Amino acid sequence: MEIDKVAASEYDFSAARAAMQRHVDRELLAGISHAVLRGRELVEVGCAGWADREQRIPLATEHLFRIFSSTKLVTSCAALLLWEEGRFALDDPIERYLPQLGRRRVLKPGARHLDDAEPARSPITIRHLMSHSSGLSLGLLDPGTLIFNAYAERGVRDRNIPLAGMIDALADLPLVFHPGTAWEYSMATDVLGRLVEVLSGQALDTFFTERIFGPLGMDDTSFVVPAAKAHRLVACYLGADPADPMKPGLTRSDDYPYPGAYLQPVARLSGGGGLVSSLPDMVSLVRSLLPGGPTLLKPDTIELMMQNQLPADVWVQFLDTGVSTGLGHGLAGAVAVAPVANDPAAQMGELRWGGIAGTQWWISPRSGIAVLMMAQRQMAFWHPFALEFKRLAYQALGRGVKA
Image 1 (cartoon, one colour):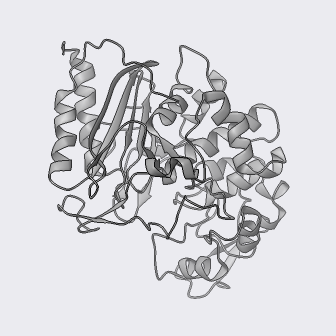
Image 2 (cartoon, rainbow, N blue to C red):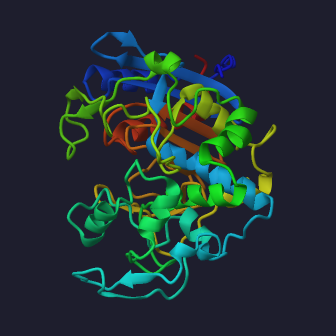
């Protein structure tokens, strides 16, 4: 789809635009595009920098991005469409539909081998999967650990193994905590993708196209970029220092996460991170979750998906950013339930997520504001550029100064 015409705006986003251009000029980002919605009305769209620095191709709204974990929003919506049809209950044990994941065991603290585990106190539920409180791991961000090595040996993340095979690979691997007691970013959304396949009787890409992409006009979102659109896929870059996100310097990294990624089909249809999309398509998806017009999901479902599902005092936590105190997790992303320690601009009730290469989205029901950002820089999930844009965007919308 094309982004529709931006409404005549009373808001001045010049400071936000200048900040993004500064990050491009300092070689923190190759390019960055953004869109801001107030209600369902598009009040700001902008692009800074390059789709391809080396070829000097300016970034434009029609370019395609590897959205990585922003894919999770699509998969969560797919599952909730089936939930609305009564195909499952949120607290159903997952083994009712994927029997290989029954009879879970949990690693004991300090375990040195996979057998050093105890029976899980409760089964994994679909609610646990959607809130990353299942006890599953990711096998990506904790190299050298017992569970990281086990996931690698079993091919849990192997793109050449389809979702059904992934479930088989997980079948006898232990969890890292008892379901529902903690939070860890994990393969849960890929498991959820397999659940969608089992309940719908369709491959995940077919379900996405028929139930989400087609109805919303998301013509540029897919697991594989068609050859005719390959020239629209933006280049990907690696920052100068993974430990210092603000150190200038970019190195081209088109083979991330592997050579030919997204340009040719693979067996794994990753509901956790496998899609390519565009800014207009993602605007269409986020707009479909906002009140004031037709919505993809029922209003009560959207309200539920934005409610924290984690126990009290359990917060979102990543190895590189630490505990995000105040940030819980709903059925489709993180939810601000208290002032967020590392994000002063966050508004209560805000739902958010993003991808590892810098695609970001957030929805603030309280203020009726939604924002999308698209970049391609490795390790740019909740990068400082996005937090700065959020602060400046909220300031512009709050002031309402004439442009």
